[in-house]
Image (spheres, rainbow, N blue to C red):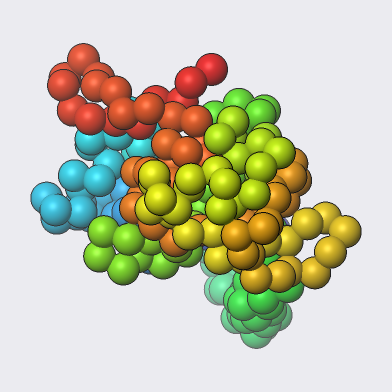
Length: 245
């Protein structure tokens, strides 16, 4: 019985980790951290979300697929946890109950420890980077650039981009000569190369593969330029982003 309770606690930890992973996957489709987490919590708990918020999911083919998988996982996992909890407490005798009460502080300590591990900036950065790398390869292919929105300012966003490949218009040319600002109204603010510290970008900056950059501009334009995607339409005529393979 004690072993069952430990498994139950581990299931909770696993559930939280899965929620974090799915949140990162939604971020890779062009959502900010706050909006992605809200959607994931709503989908996992089957609590629903407002029409305005749901529009960001239903108008994108890849987000609809993520949403369906998330809802199915949330339903199956909820049933598993509920059935495990009911079985544990319904079949418990007094001796087992006392043993569990003694074990509760240790289990609580595990959950508290897990909470503080999740709050570690260093560990969160490493975990997010690893999941972003895997998610990007699964959803967009091996050569796709990782585009993650950091903040929204109305129609403008700040995006964190890891360049697997440099867009054609930026290859072997400076930012000033590329026309990225004059033609696309995108501002490359920061650049970090694999062998250098982060530095402020300027007109003479030349982007290289494996650079990490911060870009300010229109959300759709950023994704069109750096992620090699085009605005297309699904069978239901809803606009979605489709990656060019």
